Structures are given as structure tokens and as C-alpha cells.
Amino acid sequence: MSKIRQQPPITASPEEPLDVAPTGDLKPYVIFTQLKAAGPYIYAGWLEAADDAMAMDFAKEHYGQDQQCVNVMAIDRRHITASDGLYASSATGGPFTVLTQKNPGDLWLVAGSIGGATPQAAIAAARSTMTQAQNAHTVWVALESNLLTTHGDLIWRHTDQSYRLARGYGRIVRAKWTAFRDEKQLADYEKDDLAEAF
Image 1 (cartoon, one colour):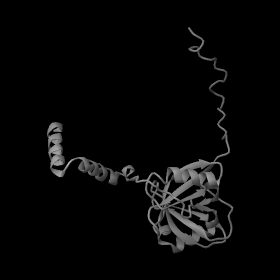
Image 2 (cartoon, helix red, strand yellow):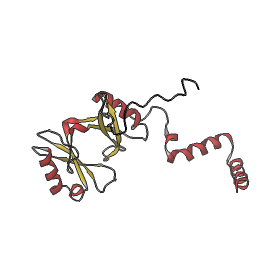
Image 3 (cartoon, helix red, strand yellow):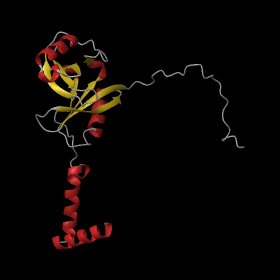
Image 4 (spheres, helix red, strand yellow):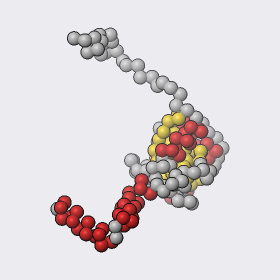
């Protein structure tokens, strides 16, 4: 048997714990996108980056080009305080941005802004005054000065990217067919295609 196919000897017994200490210096960020001007920010996902500038570059490249949007917002997880105790920050002052999750597993939505001396006070104020936060499963707050936003940078691409959207695919393909064939030829082709397929 070749040396490549030989298994290396097992040096650790199964009872010994594996070393799973975190490595690297990347920080987690939560990303929100705004699909229309003056519309709500909606949860898009998470990413890891070395610093704030890299987080915004990654967010614009990945989440900003998944769907057409006008703004992207990123929040370093260290700056989030959660009502369920999962995250806690030491931020003081205000105002705070309030993010809510109505039910477990639902998307996070930005509910608005609220004042408070501490994140816990902001959560309590949001629960008592904001309709969206009153019955929410979980509420997050983050100091507004810690939010990263795009401030009018290009999010969607310069060229027509509507083919990336489900709603634009059928229209674009039909327009291409129509450019090469007239409507009658297109209808005949579709009829023949359906007859062959079914």
C-alpha cells in the first residue's frame, strides 16, 4: 500500500476533549437592507469581517447585490443588547435603534429609535411605548452611533441586473425572443414546445 493511503496513527484518545478555541480576528456583523427609500430596514444575514470598512464592503458586495436595494446597514454584534440576554453591550447614552423579531425564526425588522440611559432601559422603554416591540418575541437595541450605513453609495450595479431577480427573468427572456421573432412566430414556437413537452 502506498504511503498516501496509509492512515496516520491516532494519538489522542476519544475521551480527551478537542481543542475548539476560536481562531482569527474576525468580528461578526448583522446586516440589514432597505429595499426602497424611506422603507424599513429588513434583516438580510450575518457576515464576519476584520473591521467596519471591510464589513460594509462585504455587505454591499454580497447582500446589496442579491436584491435591488437602496441602503445597507451593518451592526457589530458587540454593540447589540438583546432582551433575551443572548447579547449584551456596555453602551450608554442614546438614542438607540430598536430591532424586533415577532416570533422565533421570523425576520428582524427595524422598529425605530428610542432614548435611554442604558440598553436595558431602552429595551424597557421600547416594550412599553412601541407597538412593534410590545408583543415581539425578542428585542435588540444598538446605539445609533454604532450603526454602519452606506450613505448613498452605489448598492445595485450600474448595468441592468434585473435578470438576477425572479420577477425580471420571464420578462427579459420574452423580450429577447420578441427581438428575434415576431409575436406570431413566438406563439407558434410556444405552442409546438408545449405540444412536445406534454
